[in-house]
Length: 361
Image 1 (tube, one colour):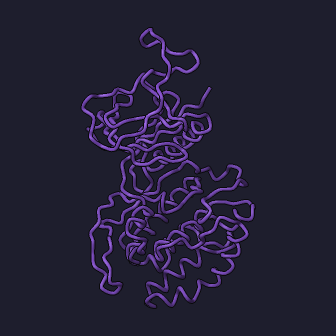
Image 2: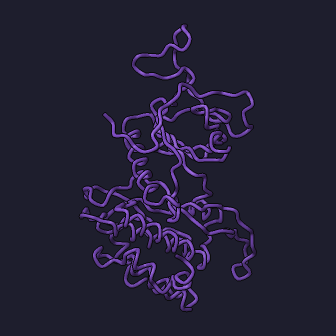
Image 3: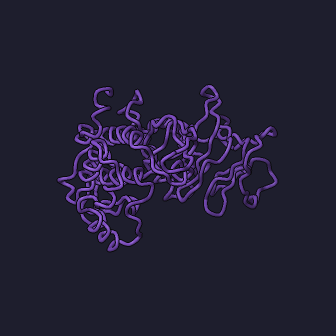
């Protein structure tokens, strides 16, 4: 019997399609399933409603105006990837708030991964009931016609998407400090909760609200977008593990992969710190530092770049105390030896974050 997870709910029969659908982007459709002439008769092999279909890749087909479980009204598709689809929906049982609904593909491996993510998220909710540690909150989860669905609070753009929309102009150092403080506090909380994220990258760090202004950079002679509120949350716990599980498999997205993982060695919570060092440097430069898809080349780039931090990069900065402190922090996060690598709790005491240490709990 499957292990019960807090918040688990069971599916109702159909997606309800309302005539008054919102005039938003349409989703592609697949050929309808063959049905019997007797109304509502279901196949004994797959208990699926006639109105619920998957596309050829296993994604649940939805359209704006659809209702899932007579509760979540589909507004639009936020994204679709290897794992599944994320929809923006209105939750009509929670005061008509907007939520993000993640629907895993309808295959066993994806269902298993989604259940694992729901279990991790339930653990996070239990450890952070007041939502104080900058991790995305799971609001609900349930099975729906062969798909595992997870409901989240609706957040803004990812830090990568905003960077991309801003032509990869770097974030201001003051915003990097603000985001970095929240990210390291979140990872420190995860590690204290016996979790390892294992897939930290700009795509998995989301702004709470991605509203922005457009300002002219007189020095660079260009217009740039500037995020109004740099508060962020960590998301996507689909690859997260508990600290006491076997840690020999390959993890992390290539560009943010720690050297011990590249070398096939045992890894631990410190691999998250390496990823965060890469992320902060990417925010600062506007581009990926270790842009490679080959392990040997990756190690060669590490050897070339991590010397100390290349003088050519350092000389591009304003050599004030903030920039010097920033690069000192980066060096400590990108330490080859995982046992010597700085911990999240130590990062929060670093000089770079001194302006925030006096004002944060």
